[in-house]
Image (cartoon, rainbow, N blue to C red; front, side, top):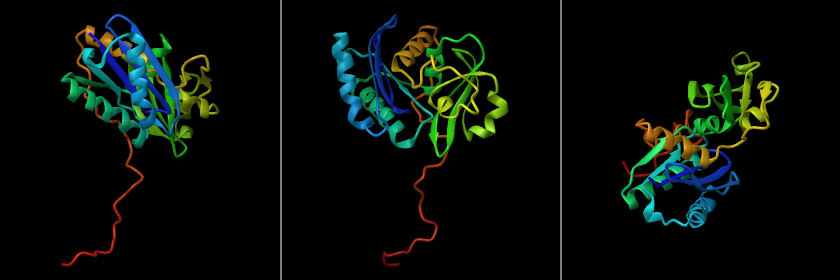
Length: 219
């Protein structure tokens, strides 16, 4: 197996290559406005670093968010394009699961990323591999009772430390494709069927069709 993993659901543009046993190479750049510009060069850089070619890839996994629409669709569209071009399966994994896996925690905890609009995307875990609630999007103040005294990681938790009182700044702020690839490889090896690469937007887009627009075409 040669698994190509990528995620653009957070400000991090991250790519990794996994051979089923270990991560061969990975890349991460944090820039919320340049997902489309940075992703393909990162894929090329990772493949070159691992000494592998794109035709050798046997599967692709993409982070499905939750995340902002524009950034998230870059990674998912790219993953689908690779899958179609190579004739290989494309899998999805919740981005928050990747962050949780990278934590290595074996106690209950919370992962939260920035959802903008003064909200966070979040999920609760029993341990690094087991999600027990979420993903969801909420205002931090509405989660105070849910997350009080529980270890928390991710950019959203750091931004709202007054709510996420157990913030672990020693743990990852953004998802890493290396963790996403390792989690996917582990589940595939165990025979677990991974979800399809469908985006987890969790809320309606900002752009809406006007309710009362003027008709300019002839009737």
